[in-house]
Structures are given as structure tokens and as C-alpha cells.
Length: 115
Image (tube, rainbow, N blue to C red; front, side, top):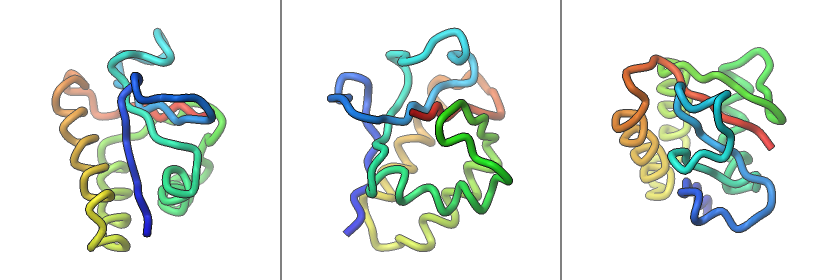
């Protein structure tokens, strides 16, 4: 069963981790206390990568990737459809939506910073 999780910086315990950064945070700061994170594992990027590969011609897995809100909504829609009975997927996207609304200052994009 897929366990897609997003976590705050205090929960990063090492290893390869993707950072979800506000539009205004990057490139000024990497590893921001305001960012969210997800794992470079089967239950992290392994779940999301098929959708990234469908939405973007080339996705920067090892760099910075600008994500528009419309692109993110499409990724969310497709992932939720494939994992409709998975509570962790629902919580993952709900948490990110709330995070965007709380602190993205009305920007129409955010960043995912690769490992």
C-alpha cells in the first residue's frame, strides 16, 4: 500500500529529500523552515514521477522545477484518481494545498527542488 507523505523540516532525518518551496523562498534560500518535504523513495517520488513525466516535457529531478498551480492541480487530479481510496494521498495533497494558500503570497507557481 502506498504511503505518500509530506513533512516539515524538523522531520527530515537524512537521505535524499525533495523540497517544496514557496515561489518567494527560492532561489534566495534552500532548506527553508517554511518549506515542505517528501522522500526520494518508492512512497515519495516513486508515486509522483509518472505524473511529473506526463505533465512536463523534461522534469528536473536533480535540480529546481517551477510548478504552476495549474500543473499541480493536474498532477493532483491524476494521482487522486489512481489512488482514490488511499488516505495518505488525500492528506498529502490537502496539506500542500493548505500550505500554498497559507504562504505562497498569491503566486501562481511554487518550486520543487530536487536532490
